[in-house]
Amino acid sequence: MIELRQVSHRFGDHQVLRDVSVTLAERRVAVVGANGSGKSTFARLLNGLVVPDEGSVLVDGLDTRTEGKAVRRKVGFVFQDPDTQIVYPMVEEDIAFGLKNLKLDRAEIDRRVAAVLDRYGLAGHRSRPAHLLSGGQKQMLAICSVLVMEPAYVVFDEPTTLLDLRNKRMVMETVAGLPQAAVFVSHDLDLLGGFDRVLVFDGGRIVADDRPSAAISRYVELMA
Ligand SMILES: Nc1ncnc2c1ncn2[C@@H]1O[C@H](COP(=O)(O)OP(=O)(O)OP(=O)(O)O)[C@@H](O)[C@H]1O
Image (cartoon, rainbow, N blue to C red; front, top):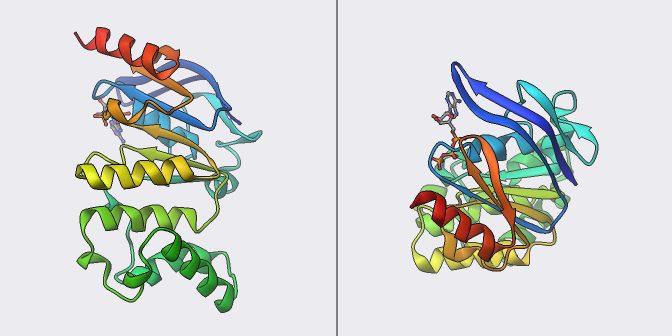
């Protein structure tokens, strides 16, 4: 369970989140809202990439302010642009990077790298340079690098924005099949029908919190 208690945050003079309190316990939570409404900041709070100016964020009781490292182990984060996330030139090195930091032995790293590449259709690309992958394959590589760490939660920040329809579907099937709870920030409203809960952000506040159809109707009204 992830809990925000009276969270406010500003960047310089700009108040980005205003007194947000919410508890996330569902398997699939989506977050929508206008550009600049605070969605990415909210997403980054969930794994301690951003620590709030006021209030607190608790992940299974761990405070992101004091337990940042443990929180980042628990909460994987997928960015919009996989190029921000891919750090090593070769596919297998990129996937193995986090596992090496955990000081796992070579055989265990190999096993986990092979399993995740196989599961998500990248097994044939294991020894290829990452920059030769298509946009969709790069996003799947970024997702694999997160999933191989076996986080308890996965936060996706607009992971489908740069993808064509086929690759959007592939990412959505991946999200739907995850054993973990996921929080999914998106402007692609048509992808959110299967979610348990949708939060609508406006001006740094949650202004609707409902099932997909009701929340999306509210968002469409807001944008009219
Ligand atoms: N690191 C930062 N430094 C300064 N300002 C920032 C920073 N990150 C975000 N902001 C500003 O905070 C506001 C909210 O940004 P945020 O990225 O959370 O919005 P968003 O709802 O995700 O927007 P979008 O849909 O465009 O991605 C924006 O005005 C943005 O310019």
